[in-house]
Structures are given as C-alpha cells and as structure tokens.
Image 1 (cartoon, rainbow, N blue to C red):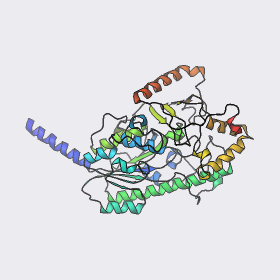
Image 2: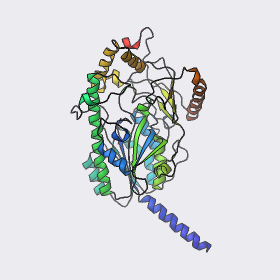
Image 3: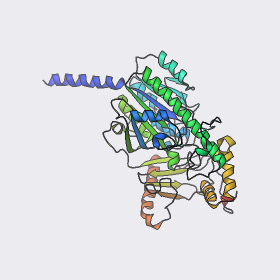
Image 4: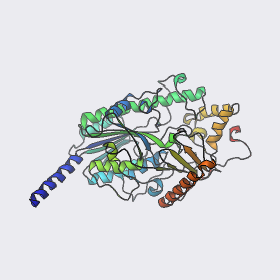
Length: 450
C-alpha cells in the first residue's frame, strides 16, 4: 500500500510539472504609461479598449509599484528580482552586474524558450539578459513570424516591449486638446493641452499594439496563457517619471489566465515589480529564487489571498546630465515617506532641460505663467526645489499635495518611517551615490523667477 501511494504521488508530481510547463506566458510592457491614464483605472478622457478587454478577462491590480521610475533600473529590477542597489543598475541607462542570474535563465532551466521583442530591458541591453531569441523590433508581423516558425516543443515565455507612449509623442493627435483633463499638479496652458493630447494619442497606440499581441497570442499559443500588461513607470510629466510620487512609481498591472484568474476581478494587494520574477517562476514550475528581494504574488492572482506586502520601497538615482537627484521612498497602503538625499540640488529633467519634444515647449509656458500667477509659481518652485523629507497621508491626499513632514502631530510617524527606510537602505548596501555633477539651487532668488 505504501509503495502504491508513493507511485501515485510520483505520477501526480510528474503531471503537475508537465501541466505547469504547458503554460505559455506573455508579458506586454508599455513604456512610460501612467497608472491613472487608462479607462481601466478610471480615466474618462483617454481610450484604451484593449486594456479594458484584458481587464474583463482577468484581474486588475490597483497597487503595483516599480522599484525605480526610470527605464533601465526599473526593467533590471523586474528581470533580476533585485532592487537597484543590489543588482547594480541604479542610474538610468546602467545594466545589472553580469554575474547576477536573470529571468531567462530560471525559465530555460525549466525547459522554457524565452523570447523578447522591442524594449524589454533597455535598448542595447537586451542581448545581455540571455534571451533565446531577441529582436529589437516589436511589430505584430515580426512577432507573428517568430511564433509561426518556432519549435513548439517547448513552452514559451514571451516579452513584448512597446515604445509608446514614450516621447516623442505623435503629432497626429487623435484627441481634441480642449477636451483632455489636466491633472491638478500641472499648469493648464494651450501647450500643455496640446502635449496631453499627443500623449493620449500614444497611449491609445500602445493599447492598439497590446490588442494585436493579445489576439495573436491566443490564436497561436493555445488557451493556457498567462497574459500580463504593465508599464515600466509613470509618464514623462512633471512629478511623474524620475519621481517617487505615485505618478512616477505606481503602474498599471492587468493579468488574464483563463480558468485560473477570475474574470473581471480586482485586487488591492501591494506588489512590487521585483515580485514579477518569482511570481512567473512559481506559476511556470521553475525554482523560485530565495536570495532575491522579490516575493511571488501568484496566490493573489489565483484569488487565494487579498494581501501580499505591507510596504514597498522605491529608489531613484538619476538620468545622465538631465536629472541628478537621488531619492528614496517607503510606501504603505495609506502613507508615503520620501527622503530627498540632497535637497540642496536643483531638480531638473529632460522636461525642462532637453528639447522641445521632451516637454521644454510647454514647460516654457509654465515658467511664463509662474511670473504672473501665484499657484503656477508654487508648482514650478515645487518642481525644482524639494525638502529633505516628505510625508503624505494618501487616504486623504492621494495626489501628494500636502507635505506633513513638518507637522508636529505626525512627528512620531515620521521618525518611525525615517528609521525604517534607513535600515532598509543599509541592508541593501545603498551607498547613496550621486552619479553626475549636480545643479545647485540658487538660494538668492525664488526658482519661479528663473
């Protein structure tokens, strides 16, 4: 009887491994798509019909956060399961260390083929991640040709990285500028509205590309597919990309898996992009790495639990000469603590320091309005000059407009968060590196007068 039970258990184990290996996984990554800028997350002025379709088939995660709000560090964290200080990709355009095991290796050991198209890690970085097949192009016909010709004896883990809605945004706008909503953190000018319409045009472009890949995957990969849509960080707007406000670090995450993920479901579980690797590893039957920062949220996707993390950490170190402003943050469900490591630095980005297409053209209108309007002046000032510490009550202030760090009533909470973030940074081996020569604030005049 005992031998019979062992035999049956062995057969079941083999069946489970084969069943897990039969799962195909597709991850579609948009580039710079803000969390709130889709119908799935409540926007009324932008069209994302394919993301809506995916959400109806699966689960919307409402509290997904990236490890870092710039392209290369964010994607490196996802593909290694390690936060930036631990994987080595801290400043934008940097790579994780060569000795670190990356996502493709975990899947290849389990018998998967791993393919990438477009901007999966970062341009000119993807070849270093060990994909079995990689193509810089992500056009539908390119992916179709690969799927039709590949050896189908292996299950597939497929990443497709779109360029949209990264700048430069399309000039052939599909939206009326006077009909778009301007966030309260921005300054409403005709140029801002023009650029907002262009951004929405590219959001809808990314949504259209998503729809094509979604339909193609279901047609050529069968029914046992885990399909995920997400973005590497928020959009290239002031207080978005390159910031640790939610507009920069909170991202869309929608997943569908017929028969496993409940259609039309929603989860408020706190998850981090470093959790993607162990989650995919678990559902694919691969060995879940123990030494990384990420933790699998497969049980959340299956509807077995409503909870995952009680806090997430994010870091930002800089982006070349355009942004030299290291920031760290701790976020719980209801609170956000931000530590600006060098408040004496002047905060700048491509938006105000690069080219017209990057945002300079509408930014100039913000500066002009700041000279005539006190509210506009405060927005421009807040963009360039940050206090050392910021504390936000997200339940009552979801757009992080009222900094409570100097409020005596929250002194104890601030001290707890400060100490916890310091301990976490130490555990990460965070050296607080400044990667380029900073611009310093001119304390002799208000920044809105520049």
